[in-house]
Image 1 (tube, helix red, strand yellow):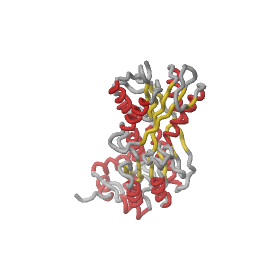
Image 2: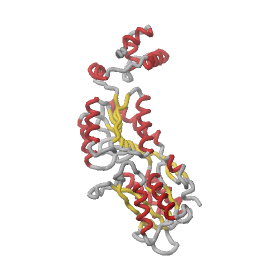
Image 3: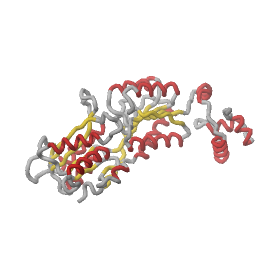
Image 4: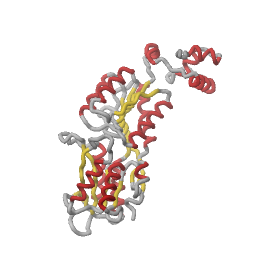
Length: 362
């Protein structure tokens, strides 16, 4: 099938080709009547018009493409953020080139090469893990003057970062457990798969800080072993590796819960790093006949569908994923228009919502 041209759209609608070009180019400075623009856009969609990206680049140096690099795997929250970001990009008249970088350690190098070859005008990095190889690969985009913003995950040292206020949310979850009478509280968080890389993942560090702060304000602290008695609240932290198997996000929760149960001083409440961890931990409790929340209360994080329909619905945290993604896209498009590829590495925090359900409420 022959490719439809702007001349053909113009002939069909009885307008000039320059009018069609202005309507279909998000960067055009020509002002059009909105009804005319909508009529042209509808005709282009009906005729399956596809812009010639390379011709556009040759004419004005603009590709109309934005890259989305996300480290999502099977995590629902990561997919939601990437989907909201893509929708916001398209709403602004750009198209998306997306890659999931959780498939292999080499994929980020290939993805960066693909984005550079496609002449993307900017990139959104979502849910990035904190390893040096990822940052090194992304340096290629920065050196090529491609603006970058990060959406959740670990921030980059040279660009804006948008994320939920994880520290405050974890502080609020811990406060809830203390308020309901728990004095022995555990936190289950993860660290990178490489045992030689002990740099905390951003989310784990923030959750640890929020946990410690809530304990401290209640007169408690972190301990290596729970003390007997009903005094101030005490907290213990259990660390598990990130899942080495990308198709089983529940495994770290299973391994973490088994480690918790080996303790002679089991906590009466457990905060899990995400809903997938919590679901894995719930499965261990179910197999061992441990009642939730009667014997151990539990919380997740991210408000996934899985947590809502678990045998014991999960108390969790809902992040404003759409608002975060839209803010990241607006910032990126502003950088594209300004030609500013060296912005201040500012972090914008978004408040999160605590959802109390049966796993922590007796």
